[in-house]
Length: 117
Length: 114
Image (cartoon, rainbow over all chains, first blue to last red; front, side, top):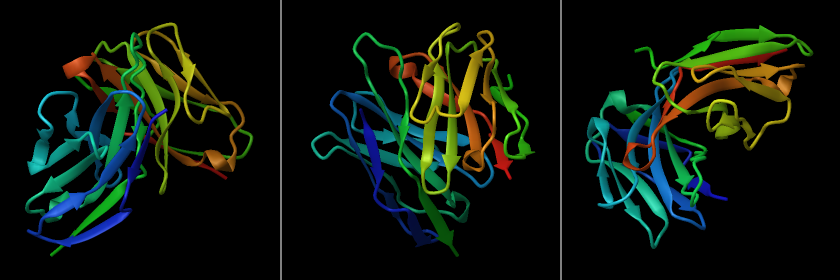
């Protein structure tokens, strides 16, 4: 079984400051990793994903994340945030089952990013 | 191309009432999922359907049933609603494998059980 820990439930920052949202995972098999964003009263939108290859993944809205296998982490970063980035961010993991096709997602509990003027 | 649609958007039930949440996708995806979202808990998988004709339990299936009506539609039924089922429910469908893997989410159904 896999699990995801988002280390901060809330992260307040000022506009134009850099931000890092932390995510650690555990799994006994290889994984896919995702970051989703949820704006107030909306569904989830994919920000970026790591499936294989380069460990630095770039996503939408200027976000990027780095996969670190030795530290089992997938932290999300943005060098300069905007007010419009205020939202809840979810890290998720999907274990690769050899021969299987379930691809179930396990989510972290979320990090609320609040960008203040 | 509407993606994943869910009905209704909002619902209030009394304890013991039943209802069915509807989900449909027009992306020809094989796999579909139902999640619930509660404050501070993230999203938890209730049931999923890897392909038409199959369904399996997720992390929190108690009190729910599902039907994969056809490739497009995957419904979630609450037979006897309880206040603990007050939540926001999301349906999702999945495309492909490998580099094409992604889950697409619907807008959600906000359910209150009194």
